[in-house]
Amino acid sequence: MAIKKFVVGSFEDEQVLFPAVKKVRKAGYKIHDVYTPFPIHGLDQVMGLRDTSLHTAGFIYGITGTATALSFMGWVFTKDWPLNIGGKPHFPLPAFIPITFELTVLFSAVGMVLTFCYLCQLAPFVKKHHFHARATDDLMVMVLECTSRTNEEEAKAFLASVGAKEINVQVAEEGWWLGRYDKEQKLFENKTESSLV
Image (cartoon, rainbow, N blue to C red; front, side, top):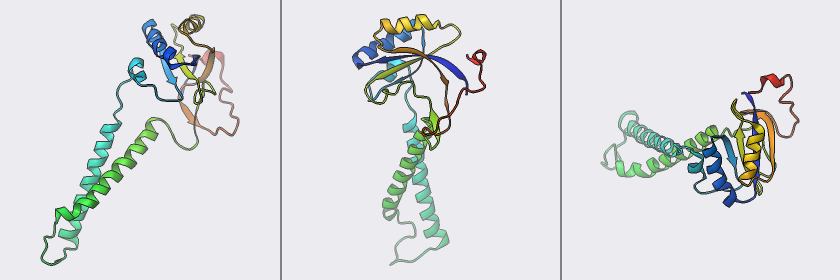
């Protein structure tokens, strides 16, 4: 992953953060992410994020569970080990409904959890840079990615003008890496200032 510079501004109130995101996007700055301690309704639309496709993945996992249950029970009771139970048919669909339902729910639930963890890069020993210690406590944090056209001082002044309280420039790994939070790790060793993007 690339090491980049970020301009980080913290906000104390979502009523200030919400219009600030609109103004920052309108000014042409690239928002890396906005971290909030609680969900803010409509923030994803204001940031220009597309709708999640997690529900589509859940539907695909559910259909896979349904097909797995019906095909396995159908194969067992019609081909592999057919039993004559009081003259009942070998493929009694109403009797298969409870197991089919349970396997549908199991596949969709487990599949969506694993997909969510993959998309959010949540796993043991996966580490990401924290831009502000209070971002998960009581502060909203907006992170702007510095590009070749970004003037850091202008970005800091703009964040101050839209209501940011604490503003600083940080150098951080853009994505995630393997590591542990309980051990000190020198992420930027052997990196020079010329390698910054």
